[in-house]
Length: 257
Ligand SMILES: Nc1ncnc2c1ncn2[C@@H]1O[C@H](COP(=O)(O)OP(=O)(O)OP(=O)(O)O)[C@@H](O)[C@H]1O
Ligand SMILES: [Mg+2]
Image 1: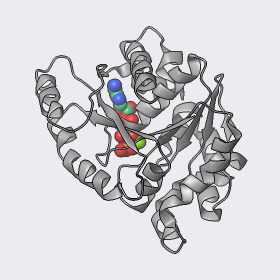
Image 2: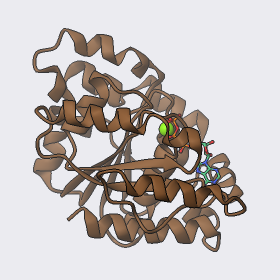
Image 3: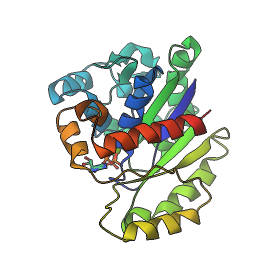
């Protein structure tokens, strides 16, 4: 079983979209997948459940309540409408998580501890964790609980700005998460009409990380699928982004062995 997180301090870089859709295609290929929504924005939860249901989860047992109690997350796993795909929902209360962690003993490892019973049970092939756009104690928890990191990067000048902070943070985190490997950078929201994309790829090649071959293009099917709380592969299987996320999921599977 492998735990893969999707993190980048840059907001809107495609973390939640990539986590959700890679998760869906891994599940579709027969792998048992548990998605973990680590962000107070609840976007991963909303990618699979309509707003009313997501808000009901947020009011009940969810990742925030489990972390606060340092409890087994199995108490808040929800089955999705799709085979092999389950979710640990988030809550807007996660906004206070840094404060809650502050007084805990071994506070970098609370999430790892909450996920341990899932790992021990061996029911899932993958745990995929969606991180918020920050670099702090909570993201450190996410990295310390993961075997692999996927960094979604938006193909834009500001998408690249700040990426060096992410790599600096990773070296700071090394003593806390010695087993974490950077699986690669996934280039997202590519506008094929613009030449700038080639510039992005050149710049990314200079970084000490693998860049996935599959790039995800801008595609309004992504927004429509999210508006309908469905993975794009289910909402519009023939969409360009659907084919791209299927290919990216295959690459992620190969790298994260
Ligand atoms: N390939 C795409 N085509 C069109 N829109 C996209 C694509 N990928 C993501 N988006 C849109 O871009 C926005 C940001 O994507 P997403 O929420 O996945 O990024 P994020 O990194 O998780 O953001 P945050 O940092 O806020 O958590 C969303 O509105 C999403 O619908
Ligand atoms: Mg997000």
